[in-house]
Image (cartoon, rainbow, N blue to C red; front, side, top):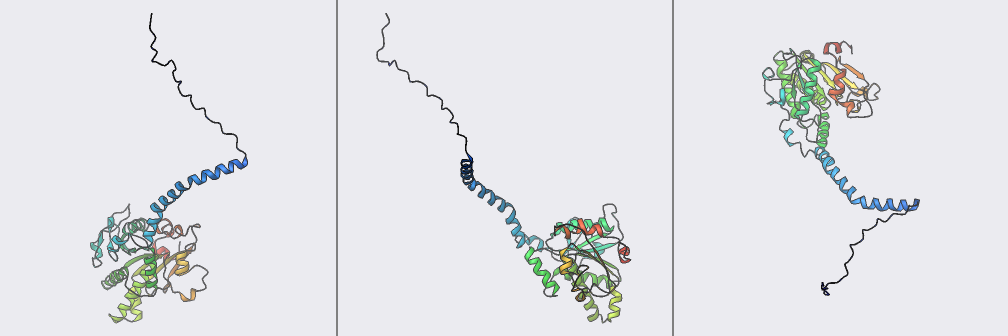
Length: 317
């Protein structure tokens, strides 16, 4: 007979029953609104963090550019000459010893163009524009760098350039280079874009004054010597240019920079205060959309309207 162990309990606890899902009762319209409000409150911390992440990754960088926090490296090249691959050279480097940016389909062009860039453009940005100019014009392009120090500082410099006040290394380099080339009996081709057009005008006035004051040339002789200059501006911010050079000015009527701060559009009540230079050709056209940035671009807009210089001087666009 088997003995019974009376110390063991005959009761075995049952396994816990699985929790049955509680079905939500169908919500009425008011209930759905309440649930949506509750969910939105739960999402607030995540949305705030997402907004902070976006602001930190994008807008702070733009603010830094706005006030020039990241522009210190570019200031080192202010007024420097720029050649192929973005190489920079001292302002007094002879132009014939500089390797320039050449057209992709012609490594040995005969003509050389000096190009001055606009605001908010570091050396690498100017290099891209130089390549676009080379491909469009068929010429070798050498840059005179107008360094950026952030949007606010760049705009302030535009004001001082208009007033012919203060120092601008790009103005000095262009003026010295043009003066030296003219005195050596060489023709010079210059392109200025946006503030670069303003810098070009200021530099040419400096050359004119130097020829009159230092070389004792008459106004007529000064204009005759400066007629060896071929000058093209694109969306430029200058309202005045000295007589003498051969000018072609390109103005997009949809571009606020030249229409408001430069030579103006077709309808301009202040036209009597402006001077494009004796015998200048001013080519006005309308191209673009509601984007003021794209309407002002050099490589993607203005270069599409540029024609060979002699053709432009004849008015054939």
